[in-house]
Image 1 (cartoon, helix red, strand yellow):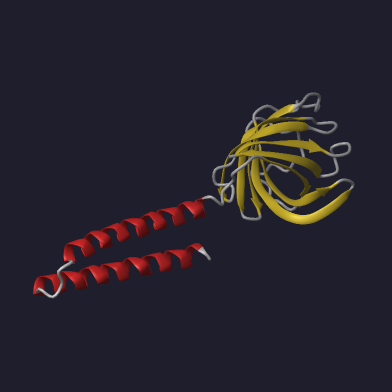
Image 2 (cartoon, rainbow, N blue to C red; image 1 turned 120 degrees about the horizontal axis):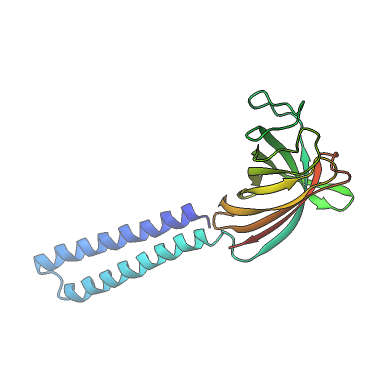
Length: 209
């Protein structure tokens, strides 16, 4: 039974008990009931038990959030369709403060093959340090990204060191989520595939409640 149907059933029971209580109050006042006090106590007890059931139903709804650690791998594939931000198009060496948009698709990890489509990512990268004019050293980038997955979303934010020549590998903290991941914490590890120019990465996700 859905949470909505449980709530409707619960409040229907509460209304029925209130109606019973009101009827016995009338009967007791007219002298037609000699057990009004006992019935009133029973009704109060019944109301208490039904309210406990309502609280339990709400708790059952929240129990669908993350309840145990989860580890899984995804394939991240860049869509390469984002609009430049502030005129920066990677046609020059990035400078501190340059930003770029992130729009990627996520697939189930299946080794050398692409698994089923699993979601997508929207985010932003901001350079704190650059590669240098001659692209001679790694740059530090602040990543802020939200992954839209079945059942909810996961938000990550943190700094990564990206290489100008060759694959990059960095770990970002999970700082929150929505839906099934509302109580999620943990981290993701992003590892570029191939020589780093394939626009594909392995993402290992580690979530804890």
